[in-house]
Image (tube, rainbow, N blue to C red; front, side, top):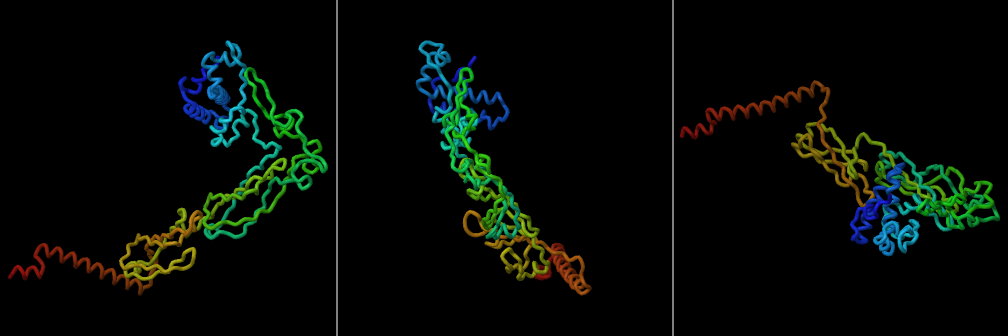
Length: 386
């Protein structure tokens, strides 16, 4: 027994067009076969929802349904009319779902192919993974040449698939529509024409080179430029460099996906770079200038006296070029103390003298503070005796 259409969409009988469209869109997204591959139950519910919306969105059919129910649509009720479900007759189906499913949902499910009227089909997109050095990712590369295996237009027939002197003919079975109607019980549905495979045309004399395909397998060279600042996972689209289309259709696109090799010196964060830099501790104590190697050459960094060991120095505009926008990111230097593993006798003596000197200053300061608390300082004592 068929369910009530309002129940199928989950809306009240007084629901308006906007509420109905919103409810149907939600169900279609949940139940679409692309989201539920192999799930026959979801496919049936999807068809049920499409049928319900096709009736209730039509004011005349809704009026008949409200008065006579399913019987009115099937011809069993008084004054009823025969209802044939054809998704292609509802223009707003594509408005509702086209942006989400790419506009081809009813072509896939009910056979309404999205080929052009002359049978042309767009070629498939291709993807190529390209490994880049850290340097090339930052600075780019002017000329990269790849050898891509792909389907290209046949040289003999120029992509038509026909032998010289012949041309495609209108399919006699579907008369060029690319679809044929198939009745399944209560419904009449459209499926791709089995003779022309939905193209609407047949080739009476196929090309001997490509056997009517219009395309042949070939390795082709593709040249392009790598922009400065690409990162791992960045995709570069080369329009029209994918596979050739069938029956003279336009070519697809080639997507180059970059995989960047790491650099042991730098850690990348978007357009910024980070680097750990070990320096001798005397420079942190007394300060001075430090020469630092950056991706763009050597730069001088001023280190102030008394700089802490975990200090971060920012070099503006020394990072990675921004793909979208102008300028570059920054380079952050994370300072670390370099502790020598071995010293000469002279160096050890100097360090030991410095250590004793610093220890003595600290001890003297601590002793003076302690005695001052107990006996008072010399200056304080004199004041007290006065």
